[in-house]
Length: 469
Image (cartoon, rainbow, N blue to C red; front, side, top):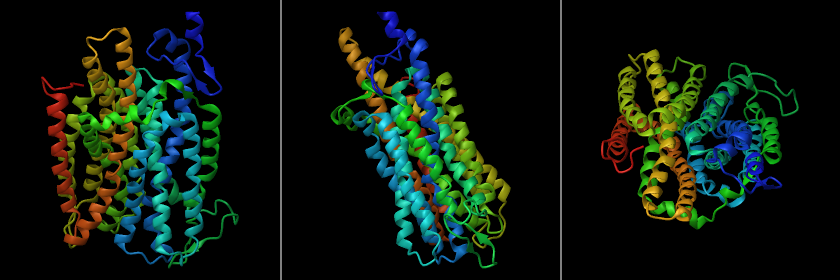
């Protein structure tokens, strides 16, 4: 009987009733294959979610070219609003997998991305489309941002603790490539009559050049349909992942939930905020440079380094990496400040500026993974400490609750962290409006990273820390 259970988990339809990833025999013979299958579908679905989430980072700078009369501050708002709505949606998405199931929710959430994609494709074809339409589309792009919380929460249930750093790093790291993909693909497809006349004709720039801005939305539609179908028929729901909201809501009483939210603002918030604001920042500070020639590079290296960061965190520990990530990010921002032109547009060094930002993207990518690797370790340590005198049943219950809380904190912290995607580009816009340049915003980032260094060192990294990880 035990050998049979190790080979095949009990399931009802797409719901797996018996899931024991910490059982070495079960994992080797069956669990690994099923977990990897779900991860393989989750990654492209999450990549598309990030692509939709960050569409406006690539579209906003092209709108004035075809006749939309939006000022710089309005364009920064369009780049920032998806992060604001996405971060807010993540709060709710954090708790849906245990309530509805990972398979079902992944399929529904992926299909929902068709709404902003299709609406954008329609709206950009008429320059009389009012600004509030684009604001609404930008807010709906937040569906893509919300997907991250549910996706990461779902994948965390499939893998044993020893492999969660790798699994979460792969899911998030490859999923994060959607930011780079949208900034690389959209500038290409808007120059091509990709769908013939099926989705509309070209728009003309002031120089008479043809652009097909509708492709920025429609190009993702076939991929979204395929991924939604694949998730519905190919993924699984885990009975072990089911829990009530009350079981998850206990995280709001946990100090370490709020500490990790703060740190994740510094890592993922920086990654998504830098990604959203980078094209417009280049455009305002180095107007002779084509932003979309370089903008995709930062999200690309940041996303790839997230996978590397997951692997390094499993080897070296999350706290060590997180501490040094924040320390080096302070240095990186000082380099950015050094290479900026003055407020008259004189001086500055674009390639120094670009290289400094590439360093910040690398560090934020590593930090994304290291902070997430810390979460299950922290909550497993806490529950083991609290159940040290319990019997076997009590220890098993504590281990299950640690898993539930870890997944909930992963989802919730990703929600709070995503607000960085709003505040960073909005900070650039406000700083430029108030002072003529982005320096005020950048000095604010330095002060924030200093608090992250202190928090990581005190609670997780120093000798005698409360929960070393």
